Image (cartoon, rainbow, N blue to C red):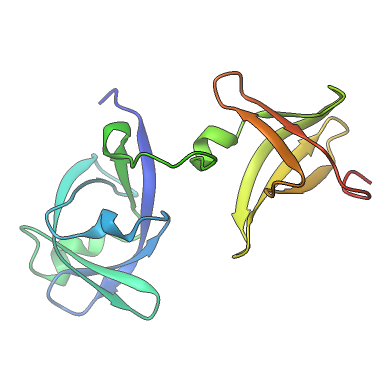
Length: 171
């Protein structure tokens, strides 16, 4: 397969004996797990498989998924620790000012005076806003809050972000 894939969930365990899997959602869109949805299963070992979600329900902050054609725990046991992915054409259109993590990671970060700060290497959600982890030019990690007061421009095509760092942000 030469498609580009994006992770939307991680299989953490089986659930019960009827072939359900406990999945940690790694996407902002719960609709990705709706019955009838096609996903690509990347097991820890073995080939990539296309799977269709037959059933989905929530249980203790996890999605319990059952795939079509898998009806017993022993059939889905090998899927533990696997990843569920989608292709680019399955991705949702985002509103202005919203970005997929893979669009931001790898972008170079500069001040408004065109001083290079570093490169975005990770992102984590805090609830109020995302925080971008930037590997500084001195190899030190800098945490940049994704808020309007700090992030001024994002150019995904040029992989360039301009910020107006508040006092103490770069210390």
